Image (cartoon, rainbow, N blue to C red; front, side, top):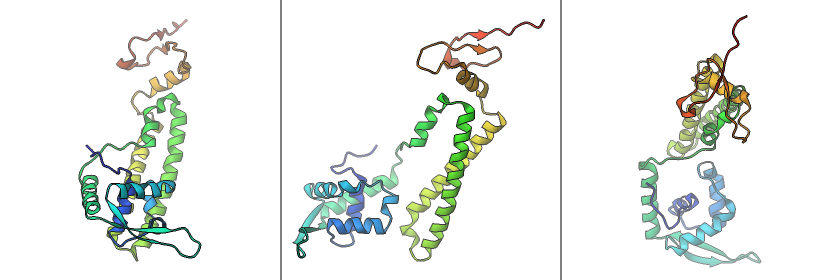
Length: 231
């Protein structure tokens, strides 16, 4: 379970890591973050950077070492990491690297309620997603090879991890599509009948399913339409 931290914004982690190199002022920190592509690994709200810096200082993780002004420019404060900041950074990294944590994704949220849409539409959407994933993964691999020629691998492993996760997602989506396309996905007939019944409209109506549709136990006793006898 993640610890409650005085500064929990992951931008704070990245700023502390940067200050392990040398003292910097906030604008310089932001410039280095962008230059190194750290915003690809950490979701950064650039407008909150100064607030995070203030919180790090408030809790004693960084401290001001110089306040300077150039010409008519506003004063800029240079910060360095403290011993407490170094200890917090090391402890935070050990937690993130060593302790698996449940992480939630927008895709997973969509999958959890995807049955509201019909199987044909879901299949089309997943097919489009797979095409986008494959394109992104090909570009990501090419970029890794290019950047890897001049940057040590240790500074690229978060990009390797991201690419590996996206490839795994593409493989999973590809397998699911194979089941949907072949009709071997369990409960496909029920899903289609539920969608075509028109009851998923907030009315609370009880669906009636054609005879032969296997209704999952979770749906309890729902009526089935009797097939008309052959004349």
